[in-house]
Image 1 (cartoon, rainbow, N blue to C red):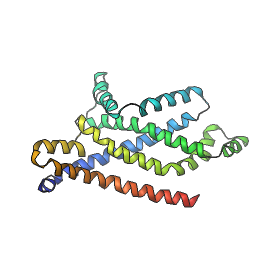
Image 2: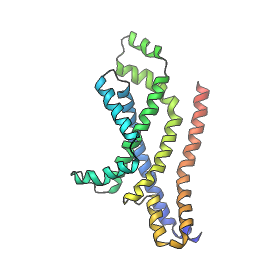
Image 3: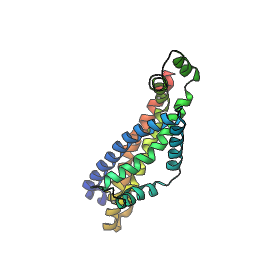
Length: 216
C-alpha cells in the first residue's frame, strides 16, 4: 500500500496524460467518425466505398498493429513526431473513428425514411437533409453507445504505454520494474485511476440513456 502513496506524483502525471489522450483522441474520432458515417450513407458510390473499406479495415485490425504503424512505420516513411503522444493520438483516433462511424450509421438508419423523403420533396439537398433532419435525431439515439466507445478509448490508451508514452499504464510498467516487491499494489493503483475516468463516463451513459428514453 505504501508503494501507491509514494508513487502518487507519477500516478497523477499518468492520469492527466491519459485524460489528455482520451479527450483529444475522442474529439477527433467523433468528428472523423461522423464524417465517415455521412460518407457511408452518401449517394456517391466512391464515398460509400471508401468509408466501408476504411471502417472494415480499421475495426478488424488489432490496435497494437495500428500503434506500431503510427509510431514506427510512419517515422520511417518521413513523418516525424516530436512527441510520441502525437503518434498515440493518431492511432487511437483512426481506430476509434471506425466504431464511431458504425454507431452513428446505426442511428441514421433508425430515423424513419419518410422524414428524409419529405425533406427532399421540398427541395432540400442531401447535405441539408443529413445535417438538419437526420443527424440531429440519429446522434440523440446513439449518445449512450458513443459514451461506451469513449470508455473503450480510455482503456485502449493503455496500449500507448508500450510505445514510450508515459500515461497511466506506462507509469505502471515503469514503477513495476523499479518496485518489483509491490507489483500488485502498483497495478491496483493504476486500475483505480482508470476507474476515476471510466466510472463517471459509465454513469453519464446511463443518465443520458434514461433522458433519451423519456424524450422519446
